[in-house]
Amino acid sequence: MKIDSDSFRILKSNRHITIGFSVLSISVNTVIFMKENIVKDKSYVFALKIIQIFKVLNKEQKEFILSKQLIRSGTAIGALIMESEHAQSKADFVNKLNIALKEANETVYWLRLLIDSGYLGRESADLLIEDCKELIRLLASIVKTMKDNKTHADLDRR
Image (cartoon, rainbow, N blue to C red; front, side, top):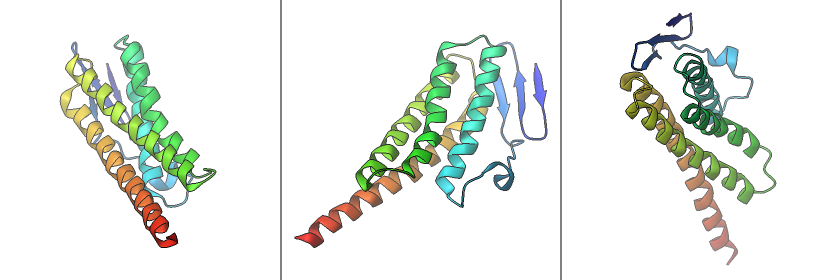
C-alpha cells in the first residue's frame, strides 16, 4: 500500500509501515485555531500524525490493541493541554499538564512497542518519538516553572 499526498506519505512493506514525515508539512496557520502557543500547536499537529498512523495500523496492518492505546495516549496530550486553559486553579493547571506529561511518556512507550513488534519502521517512528520527547521537554519545563513559582510565592508569604 502507498498513501501519498501533499502532507503525508505512508509506505507499507510486508513487515512494517514506514511513515515519511519529511513530507508532513501541516501549516500551523491553516490547521491551528488557537492563539500562538507552541505546546498547544505542537501537540495538535502531533495528534494528527498519531491519527494517521492509527488509521493505517487498523486498516492495513489489522493491528487493533496497541494502536488503540497509541491513539488514546497520543491524542490525550493535546486534549489535556487544551483543558488546562480552563483550569479552576493553578494547582489544577499543573495537575492537567502533569497528566499530559504522563500521557506523552506513555505514547513513547507504545511507539517503541510498535517498532519492536515490527508494525512500524524504526526511522519513521523515531521521528515521532522525537516529536513526543519535545512535547515532554516543553511540558516538563512548564510544570517545573509553575511549581518553582508556587514555591517562591509560598516563601514570599512567610
